[in-house]
Length: 236
Picture 1 (cartoon, rainbow, N blue to C red):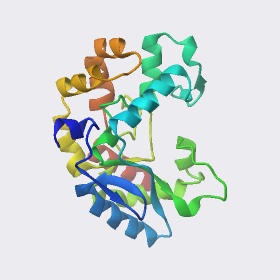
Picture 2: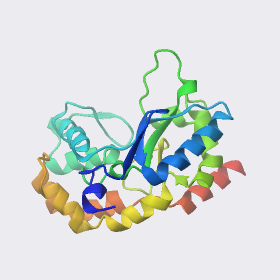
Picture 3: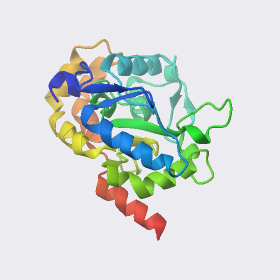
Picture 4: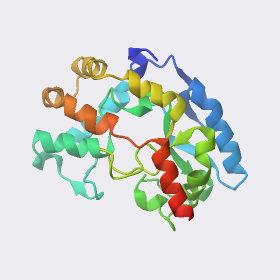
């Protein structure tokens, strides 16, 4: 991927799928469809609540959380009042559940937020919260199936543990063969150029803290090996 693709400012690496409707990196799409077919055999209708997301979309999410137009949550999922937080605290709160524009793995088309459309009760509104993916949750069966099967299709969860900078996201999976190289290519200078040229609210503070943010929220992700260890312990 080139610099514009890495930071979501181009989509020349993306293909659009109709069934299910999503947008993915061309190298990830085939593996995703194969995983979807396998899940269908277990009665799971694998769908992406979110897939490729460009820079402008990520910027809109960031700015809306900054102003309080979109909900801002702490690590326990409890609501925060954006106006009551100073800039540093507001940045930390946003980064817990939303990536920095230019630094989102969704820009690469390798990452998507998965749901089981077959498990949705009529009228249910997906929230993408951990409770939905826990045992007994609406997507608890999806979690167990992914634990056992996603690795053979090249996918893993980059935000599977509290050791990551961001919050734990059991719905978020990543196509490792491409995402690994993308993470290597998304250097601090590349990210800085994307942020500096944007209309991001709080940009000056973000740029001042960018080395820390890059280390804590971009680089600090779980590896496929870490995912395998957790899955094995659950199955034991």
